[in-house]
Image (cartoon, rainbow, N blue to C red; front, top):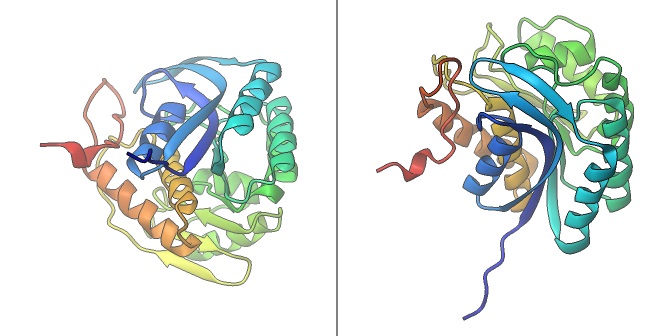
Length: 267
């Protein structure tokens, strides 16, 4: 029997001990979208559905060793970055990914946890924009992150378009502004390629259990790109998947419950 292979996708992010976001959500989302998921952990968080109580950044030496181990052995078809925490980590990741010439790099500029804990130090934001965005195929900020990156308030799609143009100017090929927090057009996402906008309207599901949605969306997108989908189709596939994970979200823990990455396995 001939051994099967799968497209191999790497996530570089922080660990969520509660399992709903971060590396844990990335691995689940990528696997559910039909790829083999690998991970490089940048930081360990003490986290549950209610709060992030502690953060420990891994030394850059072990982060670099993890990256070397993955790229030395696997054919990496896409990379997704999440929580990078500090300027030193951003600099290391950008330097090593530039050497690898990663074609499908999805940068999710994770800045704050759902509970409000900062996951990216303020001085690292400039490093993210200057060093990692120019390497990215697509940057996937939510509304709050897009506001911080662009410096403008976003209340509607017109504002989101302006913000996307500013973020695109940092050097990425595409900007995907995730509109789950966009009150004027809830559930609507905006993709910008430097010339044209694509609007992805979707069903807004009114549930408190949305822990890990940003990680889940960006990871699903990386998986779909690795499998060969064009950007517009990959965004739609990832959005459709995310919508169903929210529709079947889990009321576990005492706070904001997680999405259900393997909802389709329920009997």
